[in-house]
Image (tube, rainbow, N blue to C red; front, side, top):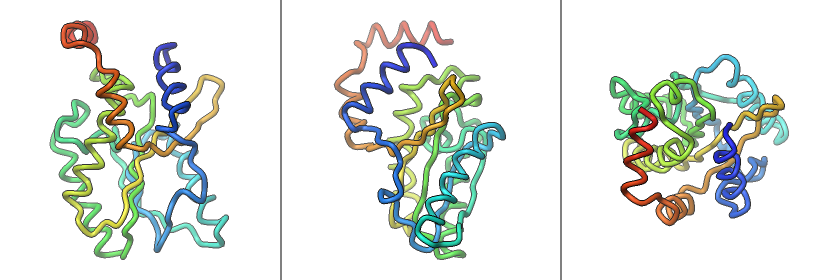
Length: 193
């Protein structure tokens, strides 16, 4: 994680745009549908945390898993991480899982740094924008869903993993307010390519 990314995360935390995931912030209902990147090195800590949420409430973990490289970053139709309309596929499977398993809560998790995103030059700011767009698309496409929680799973160099709830409405306002001027944005995109 670069210094600029650490500063961005710090500012989002300070503004309560991303908040540490705590057990009382998530509804569990009849289980959850977890959308995540299948990263074998990063996914276990996220899944363990979700299982602990269930157990702390005296419930048996009930997680319907939808894992593809890139996870939630694949959902927006604008995503550069997606290659073959994976967003539509994910939405189809969310809707089907909801109907077949009577699960109406979605945890849309994105982790950083994600290799699939890094491979195509998608930075933290773009991944955060994908959280907003992905939640919107999920709510439009999977109409049976009661609640979508946007999660950001961060990996720190000291081997700590932390999961945050992303308040997408506030994040959208923040990203608009702090957007670089158009010339600067073009330069950054050229430099990243």
